[in-house]
Image (cartoon, rainbow, N blue to C red; front, side, top):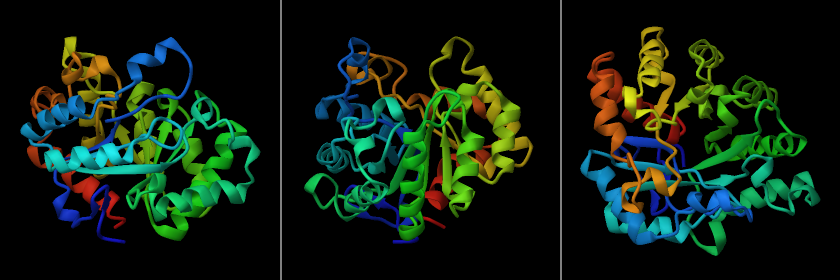
Length: 304
């Protein structure tokens, strides 16, 4: 419903979103049998609720949960966390990069892949909870054939429903190619949010993506705290100074136990609204910060 972002508890006024993190994982379990993914498993509603309360106490109001199909999505859990905390949660449908795609993906026809997403939009996992964003992902320095098919399905669903698209760019790569693919399929780049762009460590690349008309997510914040995330602070300041502040979003993508305080990690979801905000306000104005954390998400997730 255009103008009313879809949360796990139903549509809300765009103005209700407030301070928004655009790319997080609250309950997630990568569905691969590999020891390294144990730390990427967040499976406690109680602990995640505690972490979301920390976010709320710091001024946070909305979290966009980007766990897609076959990555341990728990829409009932997200709804419970939202009910307990009063924080809006927007969750997603869509497909991840090739590594995390369902084992049945390649066996499905293009029409079937599209219908799976459309079924989610009617209600995910057999529930009445609906997604507010659609995910697509690509691998490091390439778009695999499977990922290209997923992009086609996501573009088709977006064009039919108006639900915005948020992507996974492995280590920040392939953002420009994603935009080109989506544009060729008829998608306006203004409805695309490219994820993990700061991981490329390339400010000029980030500016070029904005010049292409897309939005970018600076979302690996909190991993370089020794210098107060100096590179990312500088990247954001440069983007703002060059006139791209209206296309920048923030998040931490803290889908690991050792990033979240409630699970015994650090810096936690509050970090962006405390330490990073303090460092940013030495470079940009409070109105710039509010544009990035409030106005941009309100526009994007309401489909304006």
